[in-house]
Image (cartoon, rainbow, N blue to C red):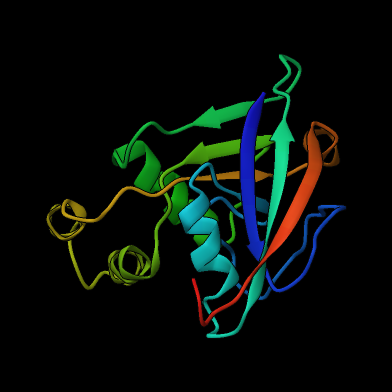
Length: 156
């Protein structure tokens, strides 16, 4: 059983896959992390108080799961495809997150402004991140809401 966190502006006791104007790292899905401090940053990223939702995830062999252990060529190519609107057929995808700084480098790479080699030079000093995204209803059935707690932006 894995404990996961989701930072939000509200309690999310029934996770759902939402489509947005822009594609995320691993395409549209419900995103969590194993790093509680990262979920706190997500919950307060707009400068307002938020909520950290806590879940347990019971992995099942029937789920199609793709894991990236680190930022590597396969990770970059997968994110580039997802961020440019190419869906995949995985139930769950897990790996490092292209945070705001890394996302800017990904975008520069996608726009042809920097080379693949330049991308890797720019990201090699970034702190570790983690994300796990759920892309199907089948995957969400393995995610159980445990509790939530508020984060006051003044005291975080």
